[in-house]
Length: 92
Image (cartoon, rainbow, N blue to C red):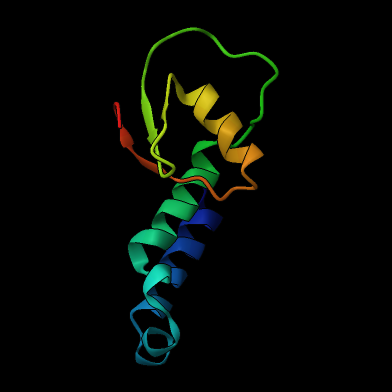
């Protein structure tokens, strides 16, 4: 992880757990949700790609769809306007 990214993530966690920020954050914007947003953004850097391999390494998306591999998941992530999240690796 780049030093700047680590600093921003640390700063974000600090503010998430401060009293004023915690009161302003609704249920959807929990620390785990923000981590998943950051993770998906970093995980899918360099996408979309025009063609994906046919390797099978399933990724379960927040939409309940199992994507065959990282490339297909990240292309869908970009196509969703960066709304799609990775729930976990493996089939849904």
